[in-house]
View 1 (tube, helix red, strand yellow):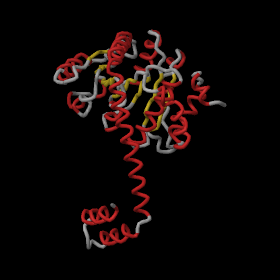
View 2: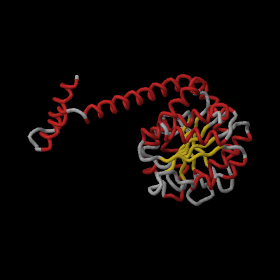
View 3: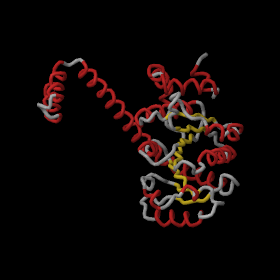
Amino acid sequence: MDLIRDLKQGRRRAIARAISMVENDEKGSRDLIKKIFKTSGKAATIGITGPAGAGKSTLINRTSIELNKLGYKTAVLAIDPTSHITGGAILGDRVRMTESTDSGTYIRSMASRGATGAVSAALRNSIRVLEFAGFDPIIIESVGAGQTEVDISKMVDLTVVVFNPNTGDSIQTIKAGLTEIGDVYLINKSDLPGANQLYDSVRDFIGMSEKNPQVMMTSAKTSKGIGDFAKKLGEMLEERKKVKKINEEARLDAELRDIVLNNVKNKVSNMLDSSGTYAKYLKKVQQKSLDPFEAADKISKLMK
C-alpha cells in the first residue's frame, strides 16, 4: 500500500492509518509529515467547544451536512476524554454523526490522554493528514473549558463556543475561561425554555469582548438556524483567508518552540538520569540538608 498516494486520493483506510501513525508512532509520523508538510497550512480549521451536554456532536453532524451542501468537503476530529480501560477514545460522537458521514464527512475520534502537549502534536499533524487528503474545512470538537480548549483555539482559524439552557449555563460558566477564545457563541437547543434569556445574557456579556464575536441561536434537534450558522461560518472563513498566512506563521512559531523545548527537556532528563552530580544533590535534598532551589541552582551551574 502506497500511503502517500492513497492519502492524496482521499482513501479512508489510508487516512485512518496515517492518523493512527501520527498518534502512536513517532518515527512513522516524522517520516509522513516530512513528505506532506510543504503543501500544508491552507485548509480552514474550526474549533467547536463547550460544556458536556451542550449538543455539540449533533450540531456538528447537521452543520457539516450544510457545509457540504455549500460545496465544502468537511472532516471532524473529535477530542474525547480518554477511556480509562483501553486508553482509546470514546466513540459516542461517531455514533451520533453517522448522517454526516453519509454526506461525505470524515470523522475521527482522538483520545485526549490527559496531556495537552501530546494532544497538540497529534492534532496539528492529523489536521495536515486530512488537509492532504483533500478536506477543507476541518472541525475540531472538544469538551469543556480547560487548557486544552485554549490550546486548540490557538491552532484553529475560528473558535465556536456552544452553550445550552439545560446544562445550567450561566454568566459564571461563560466567564470561566471561554470568553477570551470565542469568535462565535452559539446557544444550542434553542427550542428549550430559558434559551432566550441565555442568549441575552451571553450577548450582554460578550459585548464587552474585544473580538466582537457573533452570538447565534440554533436547535440541532429541529435543524433551526443550522443553515444560517453554516453560511456564517463560510463567510467568516472567507474573511479569515486574508490573515491566514500571518496566523499560520504564528502557529508554526509556536509549534517549533514546542518541539525544541520538548527535545531539550528530554535531553536534560536523560542527562540527569545518568548524572552522578544530580544523584549527589538529590540525596542532600532527600536528607533535607539542602533545599530544592539551591540544589537546582548548583546542578544548573555545573551543567553549563
